Amino acid sequence: MKQILKGSIALILGLTSITVWANESANLGPRPVYLVNNMDDSALKTQLQQCSEGPFQRSSFSIGHRGAAMQFPEHTKESYLAAIEMGAGVVECDVTFTKDKQLVCRHSQNDLHTTTNVLSKPELAKKCTVPFTPANPATGEDAKAECRTSDFTLAEFKTLKGKMDGSNPKATTVEEYMNGTPGWRTDLYTQNGTLMTHAESAALFKAHGVKVTPELKSTAVAMPFNGFTQEMYAQKLVDELKAAGISASDSYLQSFDLNDVKYWIKNNPSFGKQAVYLDDRVYEQKDFVASKANMKALKDAGVNIIAPPLFALVDLDKKKNLVPSNYAKLAKQADLDIIAWTLERSGPLAQGGGWYYKSVSEGINNDGDAMNMLDVLAQDVGVIGVFSDWPATVTYYANCMNLK
Image 1 (cartoon, rainbow, N blue to C red):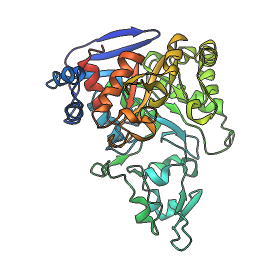
Image 2 (cartoon, rainbow, N blue to C red):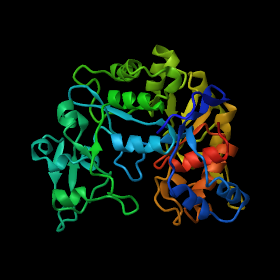
Image 3 (tube, helix red, strand yellow):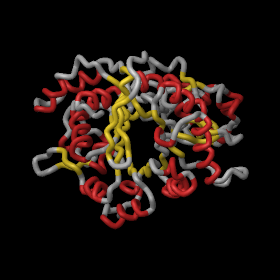
C-alpha cells in the first residue's frame, strides 16, 4: 500500500478508539459488491450500492480474523498481508507456544495436523502427540492425528508450511487426510503458507501501521509446561508487543480465560484497559443467561470489552427482522464495549448460516444478509469492531457508513 496522507480520524466510543487511517488505501476486490447486489431490495442495499466506486481506506472497525482465512491459509504471512491489503485496521495472531516455549501464531496448540503440512514430513510427523492413523472402513472408525506446536521446537515449526484448515476423516492415506479444504474455500493461495512467530507478526503489523489483537490460546498441555506458567505465558505476549514498539493503545489482547484478562488488568494496566474477554459462556454453559448482575461483575473486575459470537448479539423480532439481543442490551447497559465474531466463516448463507447465525437462521436467505447482519451490529448493537474471514466486506461497510 502507498501512503497518501498522514494522520487519522478517530471516533471515540467509550474507552475505545475506532479509527479509519487516512494514510492507507484499501483494495477490496469484487466480493463486497457481490454481497451488496445479492441483498434483498431495501434502503440499506441502495445506500451500500452507492459506495461501490470507493475510494476505500483502512478501518479499525474491520478486524482480520486469522488474517484473511476464507481464502488464505490462516495465521500465515500471506493471510496477514491479504487482510491488511483489504483494509483491516486490526489483525489477529492467535498465540500458542512451541516445545522450547517460543510464541507462535496458530489458532490452537493442537491443530498443526489440519493447518500445516506436518504430516507430509515423516521425520516430524512421528513426533506428533497422535501420529496419523488411517480410517478403518470396516469398523467405521475415522482417521486420527494430533500434532501440537509443543511437539516441536521453533526451528522445526519454521520448516512447516501453512495450508487451508481441513481434513478428510475418512482418509486411508496422509495425502487423502490433508485434502480436506471445504468446497466454499480455495487452495489457490496455498503455495507459500509462511508460518510466523508472534514476534514476527507484531513486527509485520507495526511496519504496516495496523493495530494488533493477539489471543492467548488455551493450552493442550498441562500448565506449568516445563516450568512455563500461565502467568509467564500471558506476560511474554505483552513483552513481545513492547519489544516490537507496539503501544497499549494499538493492542487488544484477547482470551477466553477471564483469569488471563484479569492478569493483564492487574499487571499490565495500560494493556489491560483494552483487553478483550472472549465470552464463550453463551455456548459452553448450558444454563447461562445474560443478566445485569453477570455483566456488571465483568465491568467491576475491570473488563471494558467483551466479545461473543454473532448469534449472541442478534435475534429476530416477530417479523423475522434482525434486532439486538437481550445479551447485547445488557452488555451496553453495563458500559461494556462489544466486538463481534466471526463474519464470513459460515460459508454460503442460503441455508441459514450455520452456527454463527443460529439465533437468526429463519431470517437469513442469501449471502447478502451478511451486510444486514453487519448493519444491525454496527447501528443497533453498537459494536466497536467485527472480525471477518474476508475483511474487505467489513471495510466496505465501514467506509460506506463513514465509521471514522
